[in-house]
Image 1 (cartoon, rainbow, N blue to C red):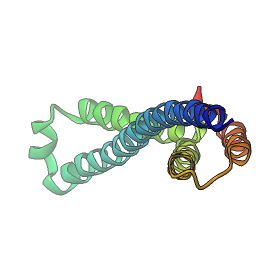
Image 2: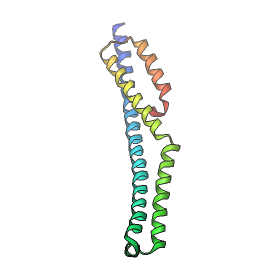
Image 3: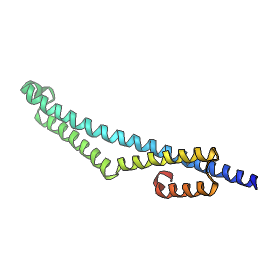
Image 4: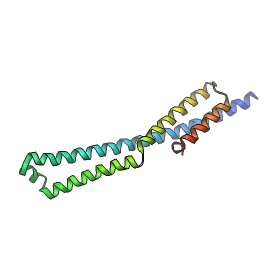
Length: 142
């Protein structure tokens, strides 16, 4: 009986650790997208503002340095459109919410892993906890 329980615990621990690896990978990918889209949004808006403002302050010589008003307007339009698209993608894909969920999933799986490894949690409770985590954070574990 003790060997059965030990084997069950080892199998559950292996399953939890596999899920933890998947959740950590999902979390890392989501964090990269979160950072990338935010940086693109911020930098594109800032550079567009500096270009437009800089040519106003610099006058005709600054405008000629960038190739004239048509090129300047095209560059500013491209930058602002890129920043807007990056911000819209970040919001529409709910990157912040996904990242927060992934971080909670990883934390809960780490705690469950430690509890199982320390044999502090009965196997049935551990399995029930793992099922709840899997249901609540299914997107992180696929």
